[in-house]
Amino acid sequence: MPINDLLDTLNWKSELLSTIIWCLLAGIGFVVSYLLIYQTSRKREVARKDEINRKFQLLVEKALFFEPEEGETGNEIIIPPKFEKFMRKEVYRDFLLQQIVDTRKYISGIAADHLEELYLQLNLHNYSLKKMNSRKWYIKAQGIQELALMNQTQFAEAIQPYTNHKNSYVRLEAQAAMVRLFQFKGLDFLGATSYTMSDWEQMKVMEQLPKKPPQETAAIKEWLQSTNQSVVLFAMRLIYNYRLYQLHDELAACLSHPVQFIREKGAKFLGNIYNETTSALIIRRFNLESKRYQLEALNTLCLIGDEKNIPFLYQKLSDTDYDIKLAAAKAILESIEDGRALIAQHPAAGTYPLNSILAEFKAEQAA
Amino acid sequence: MKILVAEDEPIMLKTIELRLKKDGYTVIGTSDGREAMEKIDAEQPDLIITDIMMPYASGLEIVGMVKQQQKKDIRIIILSAMGQETTVLEAFDLGADDFIAKPFSPNELSMRVKRLLSK
Image (tube, rainbow over all chains, first blue to last red; front, top):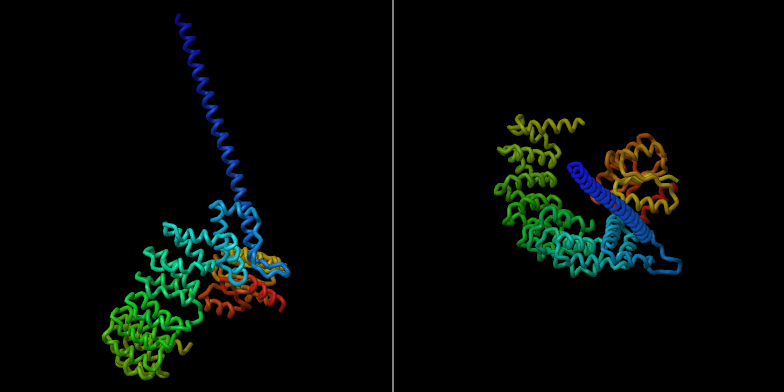
C-alpha cells in the first residue's frame, strides 16, 4: 500500500537523519574536547616555560651579582640540582645559553667573569663547541661567536682554521673571535688568508682591537707586502688608526703600489703620520695619478699645512678641474697665514670656484 | 634616593635596575627618551642614568632638558658605546656629570652612583 510505503520511507530517512546528526554532534564534541585539551596543555607549557625562564633569569642574576661567602675564595656558583634536568633538553639548554650570552655582551669586569664561570659550570662550552663543528654554517658561526664572547681561549686552536673558511660569515666570526680573544696577536690569520676581506669585514675585525696601539709592528710590515690586496689595505688602516709613526716609510712605499686604490689610500693615510718628507713624496706622483689620488693628496696637504707646498698648490689653482682648484685653495688657506691674499692675487680669483671660497672664508672670519 | 634609568636595550636596563635595587635605591626604568622626560618631570629623581641613542629623544636631549630647566640637583650619568667620544664630550658640555662605557661593569656603575649621590 502506498501509505505504508511512504511511512517506511519516512522512517528510514528519519533514522538516517538522526544518525547523521548524532555523528555530527559526536564529531563537534570531539573537536571541542581536543581544542580544550590542547589549549590547556599549551597554557601549562607556556606557564612551565615562564617558570623555567624565571629560574634561568634568577640563576643569571645570581651569577652577575655573585659574592663568595666569608672565608671562601672560589668562584663556584651554586647551581640548583634541577638545572641538570633542564640541561638535558636542547630547547632549555639553548634558551639558557642565549640568556647568558646576551647578558655577557653588555657586561664587563667581575660580573662578566662570573657569567663565564657559570657558562663553564653548566658545560655550555661543550655545547658551543658542538655547534662550531656543525655542518650548517649559521650554527657553526653561532658556536664560534659564543666561544669568543665567553672568552674561551682554550678553544683557539679549534677556531683558528675557520679564519680561512669558504663561508664568509663563518670566516668573519672566526677572525673576529681570534682578535677578541688575543687582540693584535689574533691578527696572525692575515698572513694566511686567501679570501678578500671586505671593508665591512675589516671594520668588524678592527672593532675588536684595543684602543692602545700594538707594541710589535713587524707583522704589519709583512702584511703590507701581502699579495692579498685587502690584507695590505687592512695593514694600512692599522697604521692610520693607531698613528704608527714608526711605519711612515713603509706606508709611503704604498704610494708606488701596483694597485691604484692602494696608492690612493696611501695618499690619504699618510696625513695621519706625516713627517718632513711626506708632502714631497705625495706631490712626486701627483700628475701621474687618478683624480681620486689627487684629491686625497690635496686633502692631506691641507692637514700637513706646510709653506714648502705653496708653489705647487698655487699652480693647481689653474687646474681645469673645479674640484682640484677648490681642494688646492683650501690647502693654501690651511698652509699659510695669509692664504686668502695669495688666492686673491690669482688671475682666476674673480671666477668660480675661487671667488666662492674667498667669500666663504671672509664670512667665517667675520663670524 | 630615586634613580631614573633610560636605556632601550632590555637586558642592560634590567641589569642596571637589579644592581641599583640591590644597593637600596628606588629605580624607575624606561626604554624611550620621551617617556624618560615625562618621568623626570613627574618623579624628580636624584640621579639619571641615560643611554645616548634612544627612540623618540636621545640622551643628549634629556641632559639638555634637565640642565635647561636648572634642575641642578639632578646628577646625570651617560652610557656610551665605544666610538661615541664626540657625543660624550657634547654631553659633558651640556652638563652631564659622568659617563660609563659599554660594555659596563655593574660594580663600577654602583661605585660611580654612590660617589655622585654623596656629593
